Amino acid sequence: MGARRQVIINADDFGYDPAVTEGIRRAAREGIVRSTTFMVNTPFSEQAAADTAGLSVGLHLNLARHAPCWAGFPAAWLERGELSEARAAGLPAEVVEAEAHAQCERLEALTGRPPTHVDVHKHLHRHAGVLEGLARAARARGLPVRSVDATMRAALRASGVRTNPHFVGDAGAEAYWTEEELERQLSGLPEGVTELMCHPGLSPSHVRSGYAAQREVELRTFTSRRAAELVVELDLELVSFATMRD
Image (tube, rainbow, N blue to C red; front, top):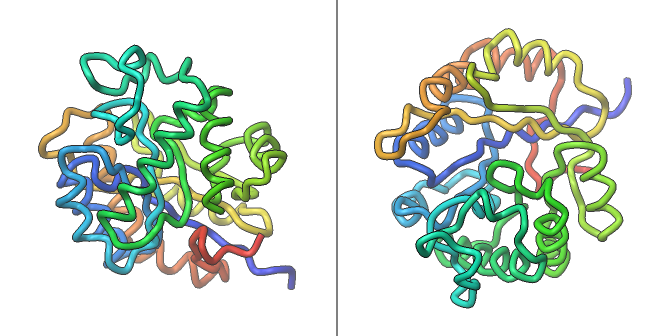
């Protein structure tokens, strides 16, 4: 037999909304989710911090909405005092670097521990300046960063930042992770480490989101009997960014 395949099943958006956070907790308690990434600058972050026990918790770097954590964030890059997805693409690397450090510090203050890794809300590190700034902060803190494709993976590694060798996941008009899709993807995983990005949760109770009922489909998928069976049948090892072998 070859090397055992490792899977990081990471639920994005912890702290985004109380119902989403509760759904992620259920996906961990009752299912196969072991890792999450925390949005630390929302109105619900403090409440969510009490629910991180037992989870591997990374930072879901949020440059798309809510107030920044860095006190020196330039007002010219904000919209009415808040971060903006539209402006994130042009953020200078040094601004992203400072904000990434500030959000890491906020996570540690909330949870009492540093993040295990970093990913970015809406994959905004596809933009060169965001990726560069994040890579600087991650390298300084010794943190892995999610890569979503081969180009990003190569850039992170060239910057001296650890990353996942493989990645799968999406979010759109339909729920991405049905039981059928989970079985299809897990059955075809390559050797080594794959990050599986998911969005299980309950429909948001406070935030309007285009990914709402879809979260409940994903929650049912990751807490299903079939999901647990697949891990055993396929001899998969569920890991986190802190425990992956790369």
